[in-house]
Amino acid sequence: MSTELRRLRNYIDGEFRDAADGRTTEVVNPATGEAYATAPLSGQADVDAAMAAAAAAFPAWRDLVPAERQKALLKIADAFEERAEELIAAEVENTGKPIGLTRSEEIPPMVDQIRFFAGAARMLEGRGAGEYMEGLTSFVRREPIGVCAQVAPWNYPMMMAVWKFAPALAAGNTVVLKPSDTTPASTALMADIIGSIVPKGVFNVVCGDRDTGRLMVEHETPAMASITGSVRAGMSVAESASKDLKRVHLELGGKAPVVVFEDTDIPKAVEGISEAGYFNAGQDCTAATRVLVHESVHDEFVSALAKAASEIKTGQPDDEDVMYGPLNNPNQLKQVSGFIERLPAHAKVEAGGHRVGDKGYFYAPTVVSGLKQDDEIIQQEVFGPVITVQAFRDEDQAVEWANGVEYALASSVWTKDHGRAMRMSKKLDFGCVWINTHIPLVAEMPHGGFKKSGYGKDLSGYGFEDYTRIKHVMTSLDM
Image 1 (cartoon, rainbow, N blue to C red):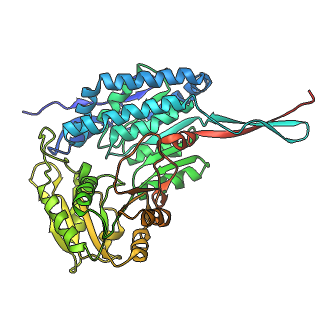
Image 2 (cartoon, one colour):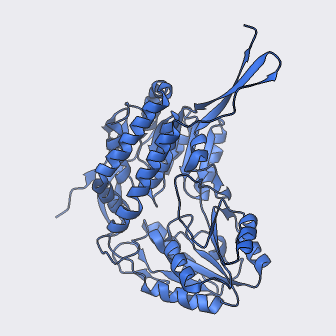
Image 3 (tube, rainbow, N blue to C red):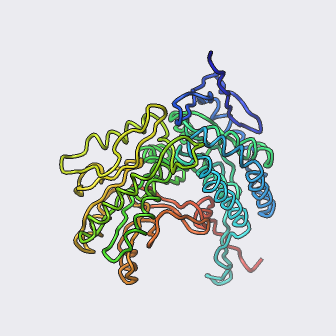
């Protein structure tokens, strides 16, 4: 007897709608491998409708005084808290994440981030007015950009949606947001919550696949395209946006180096690094996946990390003992497995290296040692619960290897030597450098990378300013 699938819908101009042509795609729970819902496979007509709604709503939303936009965002934050269990249930169905960790590690920061941007709405600062030419006064206005086309990823569907819509709405923009085609459920619920608070057209959700995202980015209406995703996706967005010179905000892949020096407290470092490497099944562009450890403590570190990995459990969302859930989809399981299957002969799998069970897309916490700098698994993002370990001889080699990848999002240094920590924080070519920790984020500090990790910042006042434009106003004093 078949179970009827739940029907998710787009949210456009204040109402839920099916795709104009009726097309849908099945949504699968990665913890079971079974479909639980259908979502619209949106096309041109749906994107046109959402963009038209956002454009129509923009003037009134832009012209609200910041205090009114702040009130709306604070109401959204309160509503997210009140309906937290519904959001958690939707996100767990989306991703297979552990229920307890989703409750403790995602809802509180999401709510905090929305409240941060609610406050930021009233703190747009600029240079003071001044006379830089005789008889004339100049000042700077910061203004919203307009309609923002935003594409969120599948690794943190709820939180990444917050990182996008909260600064955009706070600054006075309107939004058309597309969730990943594999994780639309929590975004659809967010639309229900946000839509009851903001005017119609201010916040719109269009479900669909890669082609839907392309239609959004190529559409003539948005003034800005923002995406969190792969390097390939970011390059495609940048290329499409270049055709009409849209602003682009890209948060892409990562290959975070974790540099462990010989004076480090090894047990504490292993504890912190394993948590930062395996959390969310390693499906995090800042994950601690590429460890560089001084040769004098290499063997000790590898042994301790392999032991820690062997004690970490993955499994179903309602199991309170699991640290992480499944990989998001069968393609991701194939990608992670492929990296291990293609390891060179000189590599050694110290722990894990295999799928767990035959139901869902679970993969064991894995440690790989004996690797060289030009190995595929060192150079390319795995995006799974896999930590690699290399031995370095001195600080210069550590810097060279740490920076010797195409990504530049996040990194960390583990040492008791303050001078060394400061030198490394200067030399590491990454948007974030943690010292004796890895992965904590706060709303007040910027998150974003360099090189092929993209450009633009999420969170912080810098992230807020990314959703504004600068206008110079000059006035004569003689009138």
